[in-house]
Structures are given as structure tokens and as C-alpha cells.
Length: 259
Picture 1 (cartoon, rainbow, N blue to C red):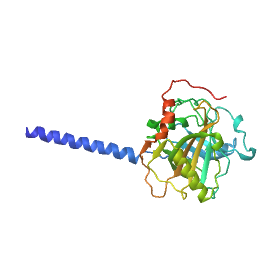
Picture 2 (picture 1 turned 180 degrees about the vertical axis):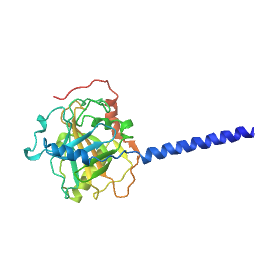
Picture 3 (picture 1 turned 90 degrees about the horizontal axis):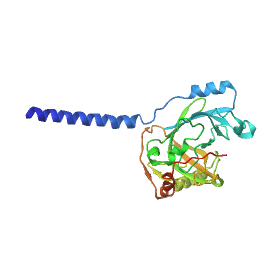
Picture 4 (picture 1 turned 45 degrees about the vertical axis):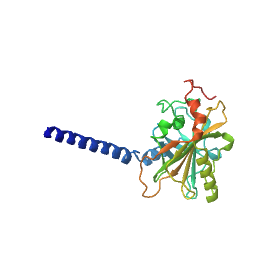
């Protein structure tokens, strides 16, 4: 009898140790950081397009070069459809306190978008972040220039009319603060991470027909991981505004293509 109690105790202890390891592992290895400077330099060396960066979004197949599209440097609407990319309207200058990355969404624009579809390219998998079960497990964006890899934590996800889109990258502290507060208010989720006007901000933008209108955009806002900040999962909860899109997400399985 005593031996059986000892065995049970050992089993319980072992189970607790395994559970503790799983929890520790899931947090300490939450984002698999992977250098993309080599990928970027190879793409620049090809000389086919004006490549200035690389973006990688957790939980998706978005792992693509970023092109410079301003001043006619490249016609983004006439690039090889098999070439996946995002684009920026500004070079990566030290004075910029916000990065704005835009990408096409051609096949995943319905009110019930597919989640992390492997065949999608460009920003077609960004709508995955409209689903609570997806966003609670995927919250990091990696951006790479020729010298460094930078990591950003998502703090807001929302849909808005295209007329409200703001692509400014050089902003004053007051403008950054105003933009952050607007995103926090509009977000369908509350992320347990603080953000302020001193942080470097990143915004991902793509189009959608979620509300049966071509004039809507999906916005994902994130802020750069701070020095000595641990890379780990952090809590996210639905806000009352999520009910507005939740009823759409639970609709039929139809999809449509953007013309």
C-alpha cells in the first residue's frame, strides 16, 4: 500500500514537471526568431525589383521581401503574380518612427476569410488575425533591413474605411500618440502590452470586402520589442466591438475575389 502511494506521488510529481516544462517551453520559444538579412541581401543582389526590407508575420506564410514603391520605382500592379511581396512608400531612414507596409489581398476578401491558407501569397493571410483563436496564439511581426532584424508586438487589429488610412511614417510625438490611441480604441481585441509615443510603430495594411465594400482596409498595428523585453506570449481578450465582426465570421463559407 505504501509502495503504491509512493508510485502515485512520483507520477504526480513527474506530470507536474512535464506540465511545467510545456508551459515554460511555450513561453520561452513562443516566437521562432530567424535571421532574414541573408534572404534580403540575395533578393537585392538579383536587381529585379527595388527591395529595401523583409517582413515575416507569425502564424502565416508571409515571409517576403518589401519593395520601395514611391516615385515610380516599381509598378506594384504589374509585377509577376507568382512573386510575393509587400511594399513601402518610404525608405528606412533613422528619422522614421513608424513603418507602414502595404500588401495585396486578392483571394481572401470575404466576410469569412480563410485562415493561414498555404496557397495564398502577398498579404492574403492577414485576415487570419480577425479570428480570436488565431490572434491569441500569433502576435509578432519581424522586419529586416540590410543590417538588423527587428521584432514588433501586435497591439491592435481592426477594419476601417480606406479614407481613414494613414500612411505617414515620419510623425511627431503628438501625432504618434494620437495614432496609437485611435488604434487602441478601434481594435477588436485588447492586448496585454503597453505602447506609447516613444515606441517605434509598425502598421500592416491590406484591402478587404469584409463588409461587402471594396473601400475597407484591415489594419494591424504593432510596436517594436523594447531592449531586454522578453519574447513571450501575452494575453488578448475580445472587446465588445468584436461582436460587430463575429457574426460575419460565423456566416457561410463563401469566398470572393477582388477585381
